[in-house]
Length: 383
Image (cartoon, rainbow, N blue to C red; front, side, top):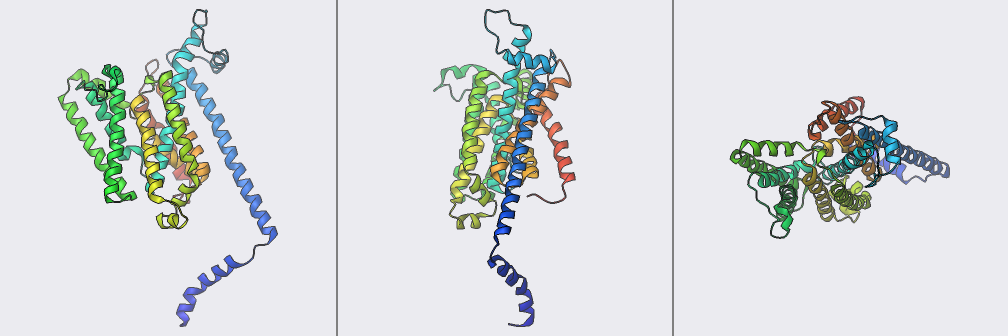
């Protein structure tokens, strides 16, 4: 071995020697204290974000066509929902019947969109990935166009109530988002389950459904076009207690399943080969993340309409705050998504009060400045 080769291998030799060197008890104790302190800081961050989310929810309950103070909204919440037949103040009816489902839907919907975006970015290892990149929003919009313009219900044969236009739009959007998901899955399976394959087929599905929606718009009359455009804005005014219950169950179950795979997602970020060497079924994990992400997005989009940007920006905010450990990244991302959507909805109720701007318009105005400011302050890359 010549001198040049020895010089090149000298750093590697030194590193191996350091790794094989025994670790003293004092060093182990110090590392343990640092790890526990680091964990405590992350848990305190989660607690602080929970408190901030509660404040934003209380603020969201206070604004609208009839504005109340924070103390009045808090008093109405503590008094419980109004009872039929009793003379409850009108404020209680407005807050409990109209605003509580809207705000809670913002929390649950924001969490679902955020964790869906995180799963997409993790399994595809692409910071620009989101469920909307894979055509989920375009498929839902085409389903709404079928219901609004063609009056066609895809679920009428199995579900007679789907002939009503509101249920028709929801069922069409949900079924077509599921169809888009399974098309991407089966096409990717034919070519092998790889991140690049899934992303490319997803972009192809997006363009196909966008073209189909444009064709439906060309065929519609002005009234139908106006209704479709309003639906495509995305609005929290569609929220109700039954929609909240459906969304909460779906997001809760899918979120728990995602969190149980946190260690596997951590390994997947190291690369496919590294994950396989640890005994992780990479293809199965990628399919699970894809299906859970798309299912959550399908439920939320079919009930509320397309609400963009939350699934893209919330995971980046989470990574900037806690890094790439999915044990903490998943809950932080969920809280960030809920906060962003509730804040955007609150601003949409204030900016042109008493009129309410669709929240899908406001999410980018709220999220973009926050993301840019965080990127500008951060010197080291996080991805």
